[in-house]
Length: 262
Image 1 (cartoon, rainbow, N blue to C red):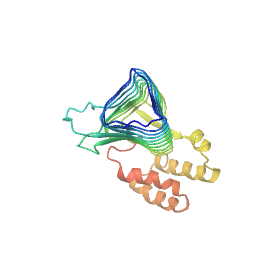
Image 2: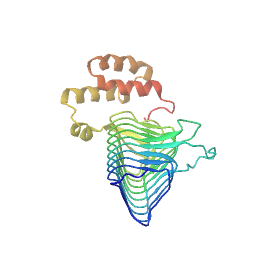
Image 3: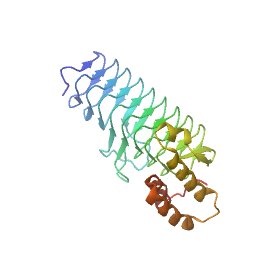
Image 4: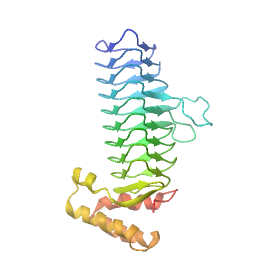
């Protein structure tokens, strides 16, 4: 079903069964398959491919040569009807690839709201990207990766499968991340190491001085105190009672499967 206000270029191919919302524009030579749903106000530019069971929200901008909902690169994938879900107001730049999920995990790949996915970023199967993130040029999110809200993964960085990047964390360019990155932490290198807190990002997003000081104290407990993680946990738990923003750091320490970067 194509809404009467949608503008579809004559050279675009939109298969029967696709749902195209109000005021959507579809540029020349774009290909949209039958099980795709595109929300109101989204702009799909030229030479875009959107396939599979893919749902795209409202007011997104999708630039040329992006590929969304293509088969993933997992050898176990057998053609199952797995999905991609993209939220609202995302900017998906040229040649970004977002692959559908696998039945071995969540069976879906999810992009939240208000994200910027820069040129040639690769979003592999079963990845979960939160809201307000910045995924840089030529960066790679391996399968099953999670990226928290307001995090940044800068150009040419690679996140190993099953790793998590916490909310408000910042991965510097050309980094290789092979373990989890705690929320708020600035990391860089191959392999990525912690270099303090992402203070610039935290200040930009409204964190006040008392909270910043508490997060810095938590960081020092984790990385500078010489304590084991078991010794650090009760300290963080007590601090989190006054400053709830510390709780996500403790949660990742308690649930990490690959360990945190050191």
